[in-house]
Amino acid sequence: QMDDFTLPTVAEKRKKHMPWIHKQAAEKAEDEGNRAFSQLSAEYATDMVRKKAVEGFDRSSTRVMSNNIFASIVRHPAFERMSLAIIYMNALWIAVDIEFNDADMVLQAHAFFIIVEILFLLYFTSELLIRFMSYDRSRSALTDSWFIFDFLLVLLMVLETWLIPLAALLMQGSESSNQAGMARSASVLRVARILRVLRTARIIRVARYMPELMILVKGLIVAARSVFFTLVLLLLITYVFSIAFAQLSHDTRLKPLYFQSVPTAVLTLIVTCVMPDQESFFQDVAQESWVMGMLVIIFVTIGSLIVMNMLVGILVEAVQTVATMEHEQIHVDFAKRVLRDLIQEGGVDEDGDNQISEEEFCRLLQRPEAMKALGRLGVDDYAVMEYGRLLFEDGEPLTFKEFMDAILTLRGSNQTTVKDIVNLRKFTADEFSHLHTVLMELCKFVAGQGMAKRLEVKAAKAARRVDEV
Image (cartoon, rainbow, N blue to C red; front, side):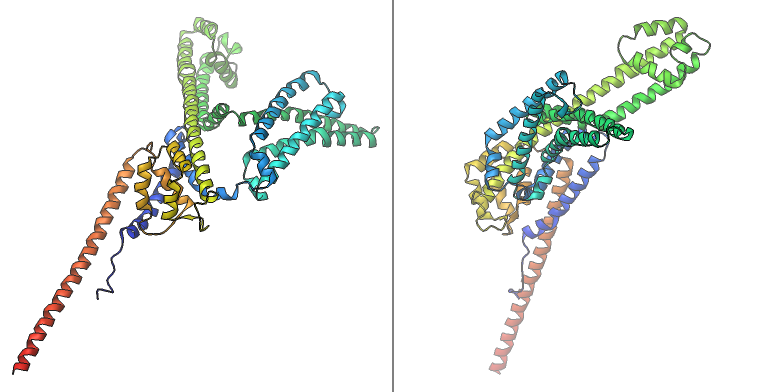
């Protein structure tokens, strides 16, 4: 009976309940993301950065560059510096071209402008091809948003430099005397002008190498939803007051000047009151009616002072949130890159099973690069060593995703929430309940063994009596 008795380990119980905790955390993050102003929450943004880092830790191996010559070129710092210099030169060249080049198409311009445009096109095309060849898989390039953006820019340059002028020349040569051909040529010219305007999108590439500028741009994007609802509030307030002004201004000289209709009243209130320098407007209205003058004061107070300052506050909060998120993203990306390189290329994963065993984990902690990455994340060295014992209690290895999630859990900057305390209480109660069950089974087993021993003693005594008789 002793051989059949097994004591379940604490690790099995922990593994049974940990997925539930992660599931609840995921549901909480999803509910948080559906709220109107959730994008302005620094805690929510940090959690999203951590979630994406953990989810992308396993997928990152499919997006790494190969070890060919093109990957070596892309990794070299000189390649990045040269690309940045060309981008700056191209951004300046756009202003020079618009200022001094009056031609609608490239091939109609002076030879100098044609040569410069062709040189820029050749460089950006070559850069794009080198970056494409640096990926280990072709589909990996499709997951790089900057690569797709650069591809679209190069495509616009090809259309503007070669395809549109070629189409215009073909139309002019084949149908120069036909009115339909002239109309098509005019359409081609309009497309060429649109492309000249769209090429200013190349300037966005400058922001790629300026983290501070990217923080401001992402702040505007994050605040877009909140700004939209704030502007809706301003529009509703303006609409209500415009109706009041349109009704009260009947039979006054202000009706044809400012409040001829409700849309006109809305425009007047927005342009005159929300914008600065509304004193003359207020004096003009107050001289006609003190009621409308009070309405102007109320509207300026609500629209200009409250709502517009609320809008500024939302934008400031959004930029601050994005700055926190970018700071978090930089540290997480650094740690993820270093740990992944050590695991995949540094010989830590000796068996090549894409998992981390306890021995491999100990070897990883002995690498100075790994400890530097963990320190940059705010993870205490002693905490990692102690926590490693809990990670491998069941003797099973961890996947890269589980490993990254565990490392991010140990950060000293993590804040303890009520949910964490509730989960800890539930986990502790489950552990004690499980331990109580094990002790009960053990007591029953010991009691059964004792009863069997007593029965055996009684049987031996009875046998001796029989022998004596």
